Amino acid sequence: MPTHTRIRMFNTQETYPNQALDNDLCQAVKAGNTVYVRGQVGTDFEGRLVGLGDPRAQAEQAMKNVKQLLEEAGSDLSHIVKTTTYITDPRFREPVYREVGDWLKGVFPISTGLVVAGLAQPEWLMEIDVIAVIPNASDEEENRS
Image 1 (tube, helix red, strand yellow):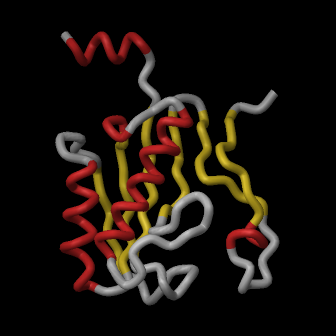
Image 2: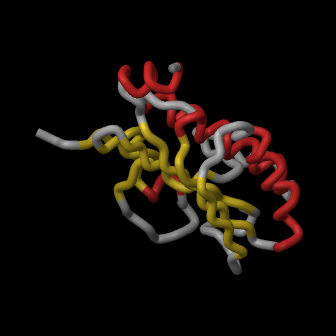
């Protein structure tokens, strides 16, 4: 019996038709009460890019994806414990971090930020992956006390 659940499984042949890849992946994995979300970029789940040339718009779409994946796993944005954000230009830091910060206001996760030479597709300007928890009922009661 599996100890984890894979959410939105896919093959990279579909995601990267311009590359000779054939890897089986998924968008998120729920392992125990932890959710690991794959790096999200400015594309929706149908593969359409949002915000060509606009790092803030790409960050907004990435966070929409993160929110949806966490909810599908039984968690939500308020339970994110760690983010890792990748940007392809240091000038993108402010618009990307402002957008992500708006989505995570009051959450206080730990965060790592990196400037990288490039991402898997040249039009992607940013990427964010997160780790979150799925609280159990007793945790929720404790937090309300």
